[in-house]
Amino acid sequence: MYIYIMEYLTYKYKMYSLCDRNKYLHYEIDAFAEVYNHFIALHKRYYRRFGKYPSKFTMINHLAKLKRTTRFAHWRLLPSQALQNVVERIDFGYQKFFARDNKRPPTFRSRFRYQSYTLKQAGYKFLERNKVRIGKRIFRYHKSRKFDVERIKMVTIKRDRVGDLWLCVVAKAEGIKSFMIKNGKTAGFDFGLQTYLTASDSTRTQSPLFFNRNSRKVKKANRNLSRKKKGSNNRHRARVNHARVHRRVANQRRDYHWQLAYQLCKEYDVMFFETLNIDAMKALWGRKISDLGFSDFLNILKYVAKKTGKVVKQIDQWLPSSKTCSACGTVKEDLELRERTFHCCACGLEIDRDLNAAINIHRWGRPPMAEVA
Image (cartoon, rainbow, N blue to C red; front, side, top):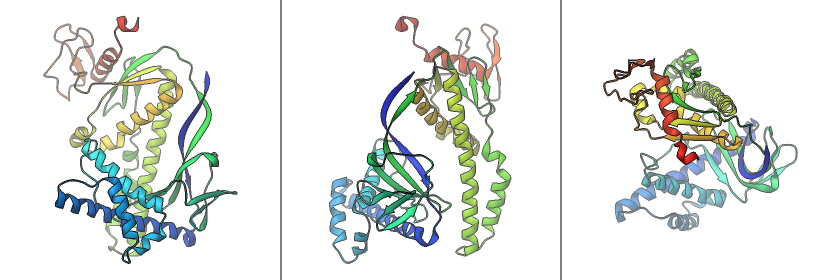
């Protein structure tokens, strides 16, 4: 089954490593970091004086006044829409903080941690032969996929921790959206530390644990970085190599998540998962939770499911999926984490702990038969 869709897609391209030309983009990112930190200080000062935070439009008007002063005259060399976008980013961060989506408000960033700036309607022009004009200079990029130049919404110049530059293009994409053949299969899934995914039909998926597999390279890069003198060129090269190792691990994990997401969407029509408290899990088990990447995988799976016509649902995190017997429904309150086999005192059921939780997630996630009818 195929239908035509219209949606925004982000195309990410790596820019050619031209040190004599790319240095201007690095200078601009560093300049935007200065603007960002200045407005963070303004927000804090405004709150101390008036007891409230300024609005986005107040800061944008203040930005226009600052550009006319002698002290901040160099800001006029930067794209005006990208400057306004810096203020919008700060306002967006505060809005998420007020809505309790973020634990802390936006804070200061060094020029090494500030990574990108965004151009909207102006400041760029795409040319032939994989070239793009940003400002008055022309840069080249690796064009791995085609996009419609007439339907571009915005362009973001991004710098990663390695120092490589990336061109992120948000454009309307009109094409064919494929729906996988539906087989009517539904399943519940339980995340685990030993077994990555346990399905209610007894299917198990193991995680490669990419950080653990590359631990020797990570330790070597850490040791090499710790031995270099701060501020030296050798330390800079060691820091870049350290960031490159971590980027490779992240890319391997992300590629595995995409492949697993398409595999699950091919096998099941409706998938049920338990809502997890990732922060609490990190406090208990630390680095292994980050290596497994439960949240990133769920986000990827939801996108693939929407693209292929499948459904992903999550149940309440406070439901006792592991402590409830999947046969009789008896709740075993004294179940400890080290008990990997669930023993029911009421009906005598003996079943794997993760499989028992997956069966409960599947049963609680499905609607009653009366609602289906």
